[in-house]
Length: 264
Image 1 (cartoon, rainbow, N blue to C red):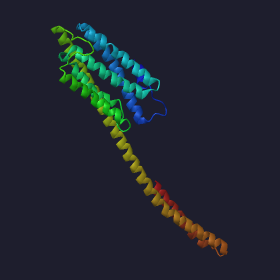
Image 2 (image 1 turned 90 degrees about the horizontal axis):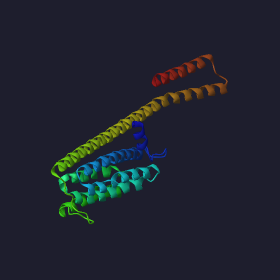
Image 3 (image 1 turned 135 degrees about the vertical axis):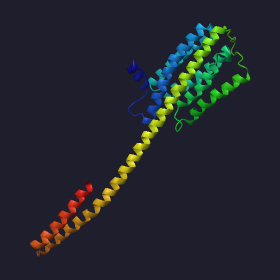
Image 4 (image 1 turned 60 degrees about the vertical axis):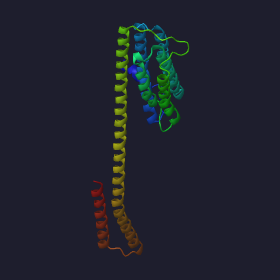
C-alpha cells in the first residue's frame, strides 16, 4: 500500500524538476491524498448525521482533490494547486452556511488555510501564496459578519443533538490530524534546513582545507622548479659535477617528501 502512496506523491516530478520544488510538490500530493480520503470520511459523517444536503455538497470534495491530483500527474502542477485551493475555499464557505457553526467545521476551514500556503513556494509564487493565506481569512470574516446565513438558495440543515455531537467529534479529530500533519511538515522543513546547513558547512570546510593544501604545496613546487632550472643551466654550461647533481637531487627529494607529508 505504501508504494502506491509513494507513486502518487511523485506525480508531476520529472528529472528536470528542481529539488526544492520537487520536495514541495511531493508534499502537496501527499496532502491532497490525505484530504481526498478525509473528505470521503467527512461526507459519510454528514450523511450519518442526517445532513444530506451538506453531504451531497461535500461529496464534490473527493472529486475535486482527485481531479487536482490528476492535473498534477499530467504536468499541470500550478493549475491543479490553484484549482484545489480556490474551489475548496468556495465549497467550504457554501457548506458552512448550510450546516452552521455548531458543527465546528469552521475551525477546519480556517485551519486549512495553513495547508493552502504549503501548496506554493513563497520565493517563486508569492501572489498565489498570499491568495492562499488571505482568501480563507476573508471568507471566514464574511461568515462571522453574516452569522453564517445560507447562500445560493440553500437551507440551514436541522441536525439532531446526538448527530451534532458526532459531527463535532469528527471535526475535532480531523483538526487534530491536520495539526499533526502540519507539525511533521515543519519538522521536515527544519530537518531539511539543518541538513543543508551542515552540508554547506562541510563544503566551506573542504574549501578552506583545499585552499590551505594548495598554498602549502605550491611553495615546495616552486623550489622544485628552481632546482630543475638550476640543473638545466648546469647541463647547458657543461660544467656540471657529480657533487652538484647529488646536492640538487637531495634538495628535490626533500621537497618531494615535504609535499608527501603535507598531503598525508
